[in-house]
Structures are given as structure tokens and as C-alpha cells.
Picture 1: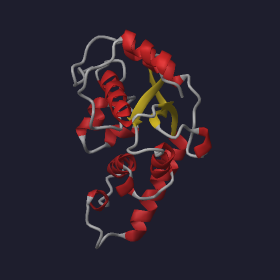
Picture 2 (picture 1 turned 90 degrees about the vertical axis):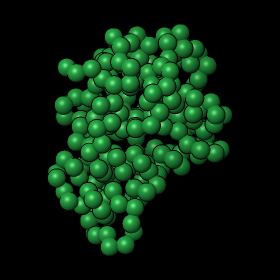
Picture 3 (picture 1 turned 60 degrees about the vertical axis):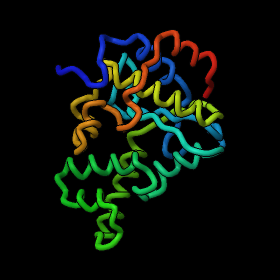
Picture 4 (picture 1 turned 30 degrees about the horizontal axis):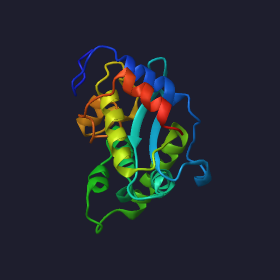
Length: 212
């Protein structure tokens, strides 16, 4: 099996500990209620049938800008059928369309708003929503400070991207994504993968100081 990018190294105990911790926190799905979530924080997503470190594999990490926007950001991912509001939705749509070799992929990727097949756009948005509702669950971490959220988000992503044991299964939808960075990282993220990974001590510190 080929080596992963982003400074791959042998099995990371820090990443295993990270997965063990985060996968055990209370889960939410597309039917989440805003009052179940912290007002500000980081979300960590898992996908059905994807595994790493003998537990559910983390497939995406994200946050929000401004105060009180965590539930709103997740709402844009799961419930607002507008790919322009959610890069996550756009990534999933790209993979679905590429998997079926659908020529609508060009329009899905386009920034132009005119001359688009509105019926096909609506159908694709529905397919994305259905996929997310059926395959994706998430946990949240309460991090009130925005600058701290961004630092933690990048550290989490870098830890996972640099771990050889966090590879996608052959059936993962993301392997069809036209951007090879998604396939290589096995994450629905492209940015923030090249930072300094967490040590096991760093992860334990987060476990002590950051709450769902």
C-alpha cells in the first residue's frame, strides 16, 4: 500500500487515542436539534462503514466563524440545499457525480449561476442531503474562542492526515472525488492538513480541557 502524503509516519498512538476519545462522545445526525449542541465549537464527522484504530474513522473536521454559529454551520451542511454555502456538500456532490460519470459535474463545479440545469441541480442537492442523512454522524467540542478553534481544528486534521492507519476503505465515496487531495488524505477536507500533529500528551491535554 502506498505511503500517505503530509509527512506520513508509523502508526500514531496520538491518532489512535484521538479516535478512541472522539468516537466515544455523544453522536448526532442530520436530525440534530440546536439545543443539543454548544453555541461555539468544532464538529468531528464519522461515516458509516469507515473504520480506523478499531473504531469509527474520522472523515471530516470543521468549525465556524463568529460567535454562536456552530448549529448554523451544521445546518448548512445537512439541511440547506445550496452547495455554495457548504464546501462539504460540494465535495460530496462532486464525488457522487464523478462516481456515476455524470456530465453535470461541470455545472456543479461552476461558479456561474446562469444556464444551469435547475432540475438536475435540485436532484443532486437532494441526493447529497440523502447521503449525508444516511451516512454521516458527528460529535461536537465546546471551544468558545474562535482563534483557539482554528488552532485545534488544524492540529486535529494534521494528526489524522499524517497517520498511516487512517486510510479510507475501497468503498469510501471520497475515492471518486476528482481532486486527488481528498483521495490521498481520506478526509472530506483539503485545507489545514499540513500543520504540526498532536502528540499523545497533547491529546490527553485536550481530553482534560475540552468538553462536548
